Amino acid sequence: EGSNRASRRDRIVYLLWPELDQDHARAALSQAVYRLRGRIGPDTVLSFGQDEIAIDWSRVWCDAIQLEECLADGRGEDALRLYSGDFLEGFHLVGAPDFERWLADHRERIREAVVGAALSVSEAAEAHGDRPKGIQVLRRALEVSPLDESVVRRLLLLLDRTGDQGGALRLYEGFAARLGDEYDLAPAPQTRDVVASILARVRTGPEPPGD
Image (cartoon, rainbow, N blue to C red):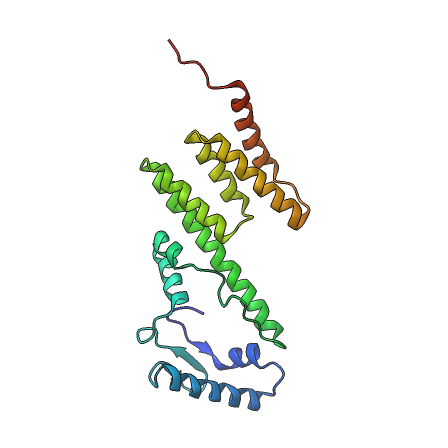
């Protein structure tokens, strides 16, 4: 649950072996730890008395841990490079509903943090006059969270500022279609207002230059 945190044995067995009594669940955990030490090294799984265990991440490289460290350190671009999909994507543990809920919450927390990092990187890029980079980063954020409307609005505005109104309208149309198909919903009023503003300027054409 973090790069430097120990986990309580009783919480681990509660999440992973809810169908077993305490003695058998602890035996299952001990066997799992034994096998893990055999795979990644005897000094990588640390025990703190009878109650807590932890991984010594100085001995093992893990992309998920590196990602969390990048997010914690404010290294948004590194986090975006590391993120390749949901945590333990495709993994399910039958008969462990509390673990499944923990996993879903953890995935959502990481997605939100990565999207937040992307927004920060994009804002910094635009502040330095690099709008193409800002657009690229926001498109990456939409790959992480395709229906995040805050990202969609930000990207619509940035495309508009670069003069790519056509790209902005195509983005909106695709987003609205997906939102309708998957959830039978329409974009939020704030998003529709952004698009209405873009459409109004497209229809009237560019303003004539001043004297």
